[in-house]
Length: 166
Image 1 (spheres, rainbow, N blue to C red):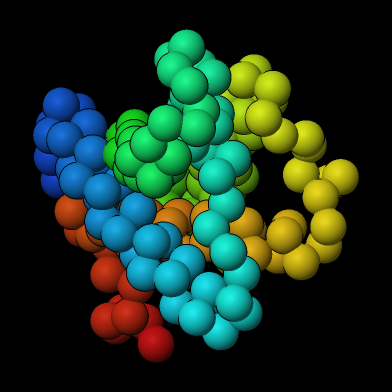
Image 2 (image 1 turned 180 degrees about the vertical axis):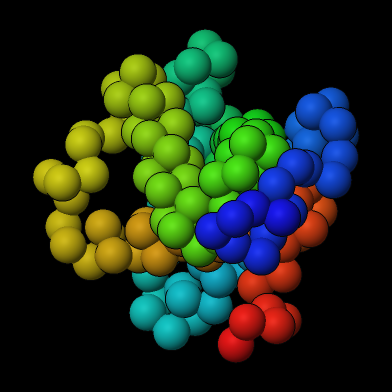
């Protein structure tokens, strides 16, 4: 145990296992993001955004108008799964808890923005309408919390809600 906390000082798994856990956690995080997105759309009646699909189409040199739903899913699931190991490495090196997931939210947002701006399909988020900023941060935050909870639990053995210090 660390002197400053009741959490394990060392990871419970190897570096390679942590990366594998990150891939799976990223998958679970995207599943949560997808569910939250669809629930939010039921409430707000906001249509699907095809910026992710256009981004993938532009980056792969494909027509952005062919198979827009497939390209959207490819972008969301691909970037979410690829980002998962980053959060697992945070857990592996002891950067844990909700604050680490808060930081990871912006890492995930930065990944999307880098791809979208490289592909010429988006503008910087601070130029978006405020409601779009709120929605994107909400869904990326849900992704980050789910991904972080899983990696912290499986890589470090951290339990968020069963702490004997309470």
